[in-house]
Image (cartoon, rainbow, N blue to C red; front, side, top):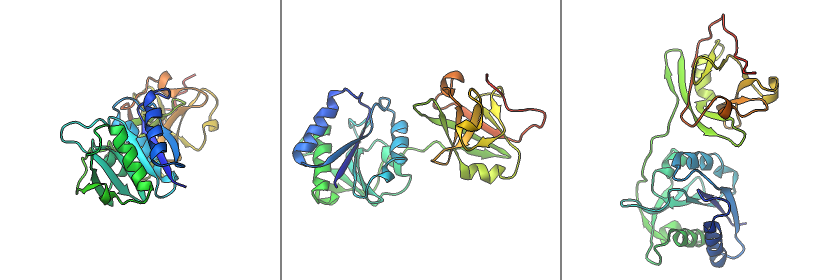
Length: 264
């Protein structure tokens, strides 16, 4: 079953959804079009790349992923088809492909835009051509490199991990860039303290489930992405602690006379 996904910064009721889906249906009847994510904050490449990086692998191999986030090309940017891990990504060479893959793609093609200057038309035509069996190299000129953006990673100092919030989910849970591997490298079998934003909010336990603490209490857990997440059982931690993307997390050695902070 041919599949095309859309990840866009458009609101759910925006006309652009209908325009690009209509174009695809005309060019490729019978295709399944899935809204992978809509309403990505406008121009927020980091947010979009996080969503796509952690979702695309759940789709069948051969899926075409159209990315319409900060996608109007400016001087020096091209519209690209990027093939990686048996998936195709179509979008603008604004650094997002590097953030999604964090590795060298298998193939990069600059899309031939001779037939149209409208990005939605260009993306729809390229996606439909790929699903009809055409190779990326038939749709433009192969290039060697994509634009690069440096991903924001946690840093390790002596007995300290410093990370930051990189995503706030629909429940207000704050997901950080501290991986389980990095945490275990520094604090496996050692006592620790996780400080959120300041010394006032902290915990010294990592739990499995939200329900492992009473309602209203803060917790830390590694989520299904193996990223350290800060939450409050039954509440929105990002609102209550004023956490945003970029808020700082710090993990250091636990001070014995302290205990986890209860917010309520």
